Length: 153
Image (cartoon, rainbow, N blue to C red; front, top):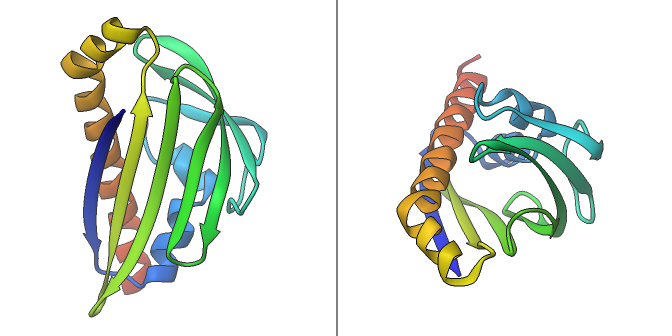
């Protein structure tokens, strides 16, 4: 199983960061590409324990449907989404928030495994891990900017 860990310091309070990270509307607007649309389940607002979101997204050159469920929730420090169905063999994304002095440290731990055995491991090594790391970092930069703007507004 692959683990991608990204830590992002944010000059904003923990509750603002936590709520932005679980906001379906913000998530959908956060990137132009790949476009991700919540098509069923919780399609707007803030996700909570046991919520399910079915995402339609285009990654790796084809349209996919990923069904994710919020399986752990401890406001404002943690929420975890796991794959119910979709193109990954396994998928678990831990969203962790820690207060440190006057800022928040947002930690993403993204565990996944691709199907296709050895071929899947090879594809992960040459492409998917780098792609997913860049995607997480880009999303986190956007969330950071939005949270920090909210503090100064």
